[in-house]
Length: 206
Length: 163
Image (cartoon, each protein chain N blue to C red):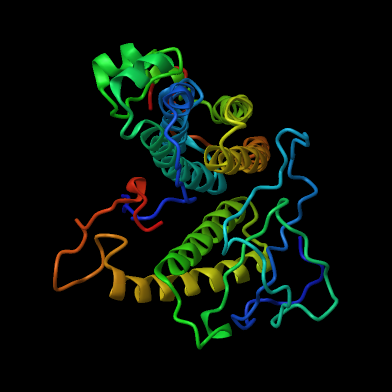
């Protein structure tokens, strides 16, 4: 279970609303490499991990991603808070405003609503961890693109840099977890119980 | 990870050294446009470089986890000054982050005694500071027992509450 902490992981205080930036940054909320996808990906994959380090790291990073989701949502909220509809429309958010007002809705920068198709849980710990490594790199790359677009406002830049750093650290941790899982699977006596074909004999007697 | 085999389990809780995690295998992407240096607000900065605990003076050079470090500033170092709410929340944020980072590191380095020692130190301080904060400024989680239901008090974090 989870408990909410009434504190952001990193402080966010944006003094100048800028809906144009919100239009891009929303992608890290509900886009393909966003924090929602990251969290659900790791928290779903942790059940099938064969060793305790991998279970723990997926659990703990999946949890931290929820804190990042709150940060990105806060950035979007503060960038659009109190902005008049005319300014929203000028920033290219007219269609967004029609359906969502200035609520924070999980969608990509291009407007595609969040979909579970962004995540995978393949039933294979190696495939899953490789996906996680790629996901961290894609999220880092996305934050670098956002940093390029937000250079004018240090209030926005600062938390984006923090979030980018976390992607780099998570990539490192997943790499270590992958090494551990590979060692575990290479052990001479390793039994897995989550797949029928390993539990049943040739006549399908379990 | 450890420089030697010394046991850090009994170290005192005064260690202000940054994490000793080795940065060499952290695959940092060096790029001028995306510096690994992060502008850290007050309280994330390292104010006290002296380690008074388990590390002998001049022993291991402090290796930052990555380019920025964070520290917890002992309130006792400035007893005459009333510590403000903002400072306090910033210290809680620092300690929470240190605990998250150390926990994730320990998930894949369970035998790293130095990291474990730091985790114990920061987790203890975090617990104490949160208790202190919540007594005055209201609950940070719904687990805090209270006589008046202050959980609903605004502003929330996204509204610059507990900022």
